[in-house]
Length: 176
Image (cartoon, rainbow, N blue to C red; front, side):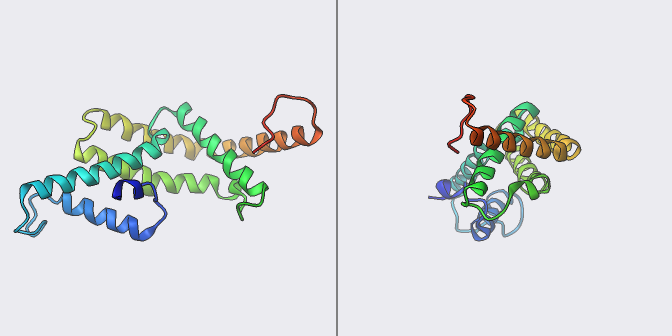
C-alpha cells in the first residue's frame, strides 16, 4: 500500500509519514532510533519498504534527474497536458503563470532532496552521484533559461490552437 501511495506527493500527511519512516529507518547509531524490542528483520523490512517508496517516487520524476534534453522533453509534455486541461476548463489556473517558479521549487524542495536520500541509502551505487548532479545541473539550467522556455511553450500552444481553429489540414493533434 505504501508503494502505491508513494506517488501522491501533494498529500502533506502522507509526505510527513514517509519522512518519519525514512528518519526511523536510517537513523543508524542514534540512541532511541528504533524500539529496543525490534528485531533485525523488522529494521531491514522497514528500510526496504521506505527505499522502494522512494524508488517509486524517483521513477515518477526520473526525467528531472537525467540529461537536460530528456528533462526538457518531458517537462514540455507535462506543460502541454496542463495547458490543455486549463484551456478545456478542467484546471482553474493557467500553468504558464507559475511554471517557471514551480519548477525551481520542485527541484529545491522535492527533486534534489529525493536524489540526496537515494544517494545516502546507496540504492543506486555510484550512479547516485550522476542522478544528483543531473538534478542540480537541470535546476541551474532551468533557472537561467526557464522563463524563455515557458514563453516558447506558451507560443507553441497558441500556434497549435491557431492551427486547429483554422483547420488548415496540418498534421497536428487537436484532440487534447
